[in-house]
Image: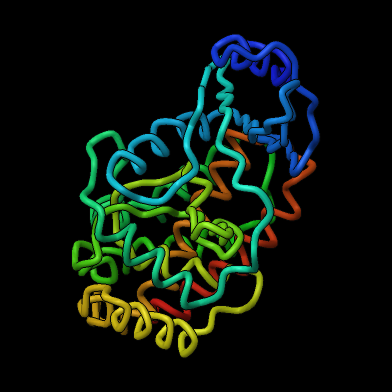
Length: 303
């Protein structure tokens, strides 16, 4: 386990911005990333964000988004050290209020209307279709490491989804297809005195924008297709493409979006479990989340 080099990263960033000292105050810290507010001697502040692979190219995504006109916090400086990214970002200050559904659709319309850019990874129909197969590969690696031994139901579900994936992934390239934020939740939208800014671009990619709309209400509660349908309709009313409501893969837009968003989450959880976190102590929590999501996927994608 590499120790977190945040102190050294911050030193590098202070040098790059001509600051000498800073007082650090934690905002939110977990094993793979951290967000702090730093106060400088002159009374100004900035946000110090650091993260390890695979979250180590967020500075590029933020700079790209800003260049293309998406309202995001400005990157003052960034540096990479031992597989960790550190950034000094514009401090947006306290939120004026929490983001609501209308804020969400307004932000999604702007993001999805932005031209796509080559540096972002791509999740097209072919990539979507292979998600269950990739999850099965992660499962194979976990079992080789004597983990996830009692997860035959996970394997069975992934096999069934893999067989249906060709048909069910159809329509992935329908509009909105382009920038996908991929951590699109009310907490990623900062509503301040001077308008809104979109945060947390660490896993942005080019793909079906419906995955963003499906992620807005989170994955803690059971999926709610009726609620998502209303959100999609608000999105179209706010200027989003009418194709957001089109059927795809033989399913309604809302079932397709919720089903594939949860399949995307399953593959990510399993990769995290074997590759990025790789801590057997976390297995029970990951297996529980994966089982719950796979039950939803089978139901939503009508498999």
